[in-house]
Amino acid sequence: MVQLANAIKTLDETLAAEANGFSLEGFYQKTPEILRGYVELVYDLQNHPSIRFIEGLLYKSKYYNRGSQSVVLSEVESDGRSFVFSTPRLKSDGRLYLDLPFDHQGIDELFKMQFVSQPYGHIRETLNLSEKDDAQFAAFFTEEAPQKTPRYDGDGVRIRYFGHACVLIETKHVSVLCDPVISSKSTSGIDRFTYADLPETLDYVLITHTHQDHVMFESLLHLRHKIKNLIVPKSVGGDRIDPSLKLILQSVGFKNVRDLDEMETIEIPDGVITGLPFLGEHADLNVRTKLAWFVKLMGRSIIMAADSNNLESKLYEHLHEIYGDVDILFLGMECEGAPMSWLYGPLLTKPLSRKNDQSRRFDGSTSKKGMEIVDILNPASVYVYAMGQEPWCTFLTSIQYTDESKPIVESNRLVEECRGRGIESERLYGKREMHIEPR
Image 1 (cartoon, rainbow, N blue to C red):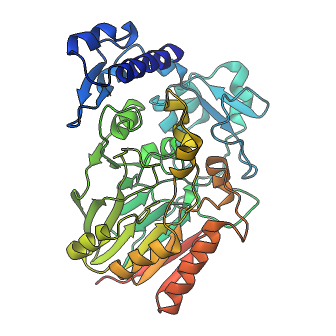
Image 2: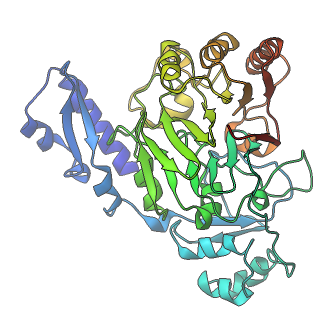
Image 3: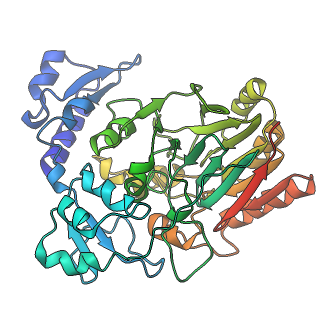
């Protein structure tokens, strides 16, 4: 990894030194050996050079090392966990480390046992568990029958909020889960839905964008055996700030992964799923792997707008001309956001000025911008979500709000203004269930 990082830095420096352009032959001759055959020189129409990585080939190369992947198992006793980016994880008591690549079939067999009983010897053999780990591994199992959640069979549409940006939408014929960041069962803390509250099969799982609080491998690997179709946004392709989410997920063992572009639609039982464009929340970088989701079931329309920052309200006017009024709008309002370097800093090959770093943030809409969306889409209900407040999300977001925090103040204003207009509105926290009748 260090060699690759140094090679990329060398290429960046070469491009910067040759800003006025140079021959293709000259570029490839100066490409570090480690990257030769894996990159292409490209220009935009203003003659600005950049590098395109041939991602699909890199995943088939020696540099994609499945042996560097591993799984850590432990009992969940509380919501408190180390911050997700404080790596590496060092071995400690109470945790079992399995040197398994993420695409190992045993991972699916293990998590399936929460819902389908199997002999202990079966999973032990599937994972090729060593004798020294047997006692600790056995402690994770019980002889009690697994809890099963019956499939929703109501006449309308049921919506369950699982915390943060995770929303489950169901009819008797189809289930759609968005941004699965799901809590395990906990004996302390707030009431919640957990893995046990999901249906036996997830027909469609949607991802809005690639940030760690929306595409969480822990939850996705936990659910992989249930997922029939995984729908993700399409990337620019070949840019290190915007890698292909489809290729990433396929490389770790997910099947039936489909990437949608903006305004593409797929038909599903009882309705459709459409990917909608959204602006902002990516520090003004050219990141295309992001979609808000428009789900229409039984005549009812739901938009999960993720962390949309309403930088241009004309976008929503165009969408309203196509889709009309919305029944339910889910909108993230983390309107302060971290600076660009917080997430993309390791990808930079030269320092970013503090002014640019602080002005280019991962921020969503303020109350004013949010109400402009409400005014245009005219939803019957507005729910603020994706705020990172749930205790099982803190290790992903590091967010600790007070009553004076800008996102809390701004979301309170939006909720109050919506209610003042007779629009059902709430900032969601923990769990919530809603039902809407078919139209």
